[in-house]
Length: 116
Image 1 (cartoon, rainbow, N blue to C red):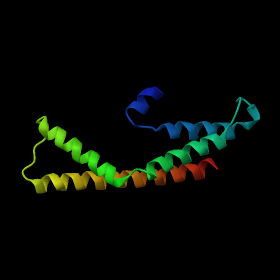
Image 2: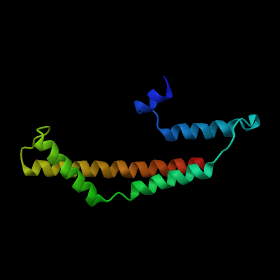
Image 3: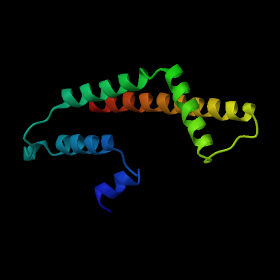
């Protein structure tokens, strides 16, 4: 399967490709078959992405989710039995996003350790 397809199907992540490239370089140093190796830049980018994830404002996220649900409801794409059920869906989505955010930050921390 081509790398593009694996990325598209989310079977691998771009960071996995970067890690594999660094690993191959480390394992084949005697070949000296690369032009430039820039671990510092890779670490800088990982740290920037981590900070971007950590800086997402929970209140803005809640507003975005609420407005998206209202838009979907107005378009007839989703219906709620009550205001309470809509609130539950909103809170569940916010909770899920925060967990995804936390897991992504943890994964980036792991990747940073591996690159160092």
